[in-house]
Image 1 (tube, rainbow, N blue to C red):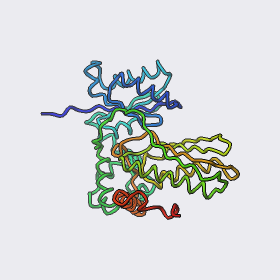
Image 2: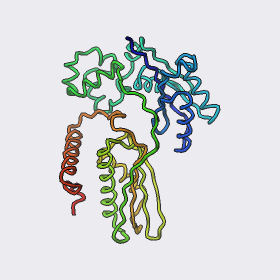
Image 3: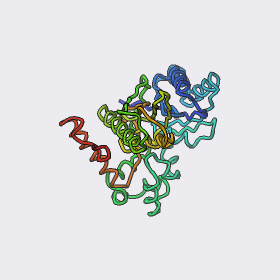
Image 4: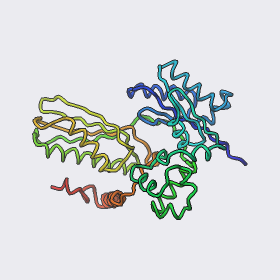
Amino acid sequence: MTTRQRHIAHLHLHAALTESQYDDVIELLSGVTPHVQPVPPNAVQLDLTSALRYFDLSPYNVVQLAKLRLKALYGVDSSAGLANNRMLAALAADASAPGETTWVPADHVTDWLYPRPVTALPGVGRTTAETLHRYGLHTIGQITDIPAETLQRLLGVGQARLLAERARGHDPRPVVPAEPAVHLIADLVLERDCLDPAQHHRAVLGLADQIGQRLRGESQIASRLTLTVRYADCSSTTSTSTLPEPTNHSPALAATALNLLAGFGLQRARVRAFVVRADRLLSADRAYRQLSLDPGDARARAAEAAADRARRRFGPEAVRSATLAN
């Protein structure tokens, strides 16, 4: 019995879309295939495998059909990548000029990947790239050519294995259809209208920590945070930021929330309440995490997991950040 080859498309949308417009795009592309996964804020992935027989077209021509519908109905230009898995399709889309489609057939994956820079692989950040470059590893092909033991000595066993799999073009993740929009909200009404920036900082930090705990408890990650500040005169200000990468790690959520807070310039404002909202939620196993060579990051995540276990066993107040302690 042979496994049917998958055909995955990744579309970059060359337009600044509102959330409502982005939802309209997802709905439109669901008419091409029911297997449509949002990649906020300006991309989308489609599993075309089951749509080929329906349209009686090649994978490439189904992609062109999707792009034509986007342009005709919403005026959205796009570029696309087509391959047999999600990672390769995204890499191919990155290599496509606006309006073009790059198709990487299954029997050409190795040749196509070989000369590409290692930084094109997901998860290879600046620190990892510097380590690889220091040892003369600049292309994806060079990663596949060196012995596994050598790569493990450079990056550690876990990261080396993951990088080697990606360098060979392997990605088992399925395209998961869009789910109904959901979000998480944490809010805090202050005991009295507050002018103290230190108290503002502490309140937002606590709300970001709450959001992180809830996301991890529900095995979800957030792609975007919104901070709303309500003032003594009942007015409010709201700001939104897309996270550098989807996450449920409290320090990463806190950094984004505090950046939003700093942007408000509240030195002279009487604040009555804060609201932090996390949305564009995904299942925690549906996104890449940036590879890191910083042992402090691994220790912080291990400590966070231990704190979560303690809270589940002894209650939500069992472990608290030192910054938030009374």
